[in-house]
Length: 198
Image (cartoon, rainbow, N blue to C red; front, side, top):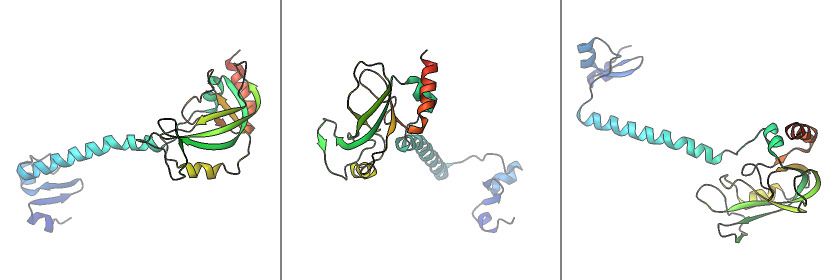
């Protein structure tokens, strides 16, 4: 391929990018790394620093918006309580525990808000507790980007029963926002839990 335009600027094109034409002539190898001086060196170093900074930030941003997950087997074997329940309400509290009523209020990194689901317990399948509350407050993952109105709308007419898998004396989720399984997985959950707790 002719390098007419870039040759005028002292550069020659080839499959792997650009190299100074004078460097190619001196080394006989367009793939050899040229020595970079002066203003160009500053630009190259600045670009490298920017790209490294950008690469370091990408995983953090990605993790902030991805929901935490656990497999069916992990949840079933780690659960102290296997319940059946349905959502009866949604609320939000700030970092001081005060109620937030603005539907536009959001959760996510840098915010102290937490959205909670009010879950009525319909049936207790497995528990290590002497007493199971009639209603539970289960927090969604505060690092997920949700608005209060969005979650309220999602559960407004939601009376579907679900499996609720929790741990500990305080009936906590195993990971933030991870506590529901579809009701049709009941037999599998009980089988896995029973095998792990013989």
